[in-house]
Amino acid sequence: MFGLGPAELLIILFVVLLIFGPKKLPEVGRAIGRGIREFRSAAKEIEDAAEDLENENEEE
Image 1 (tube, rainbow, N blue to C red):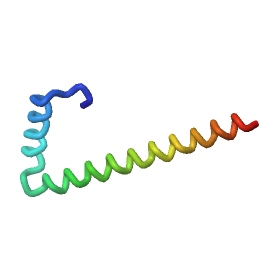
Image 2 (cartoon, rainbow, N blue to C red):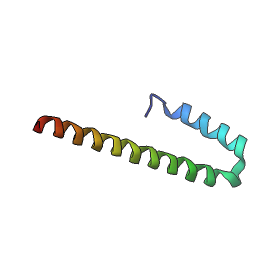
Image 3 (cartoon, rainbow, N blue to C red):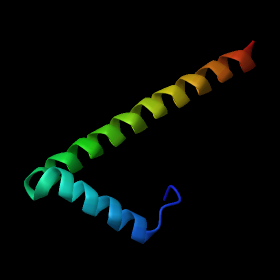
Image 4 (cartoon, one colour):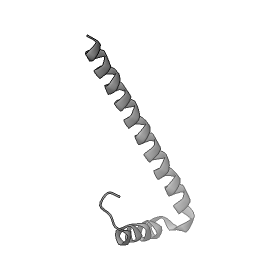
């Protein structure tokens, strides 16, 4: 996963916990999840548009 091992992920999670506190952690997780979902959706739309363009070029 992005070249990060379990130790690095634990350190990152600990730092995030220190910065935001335990009450804000669920909000931060939801925001990150929404951001990842939106990114995947945008990437999928771009991929579909590129495939459509490629198919149009093959038909000509």
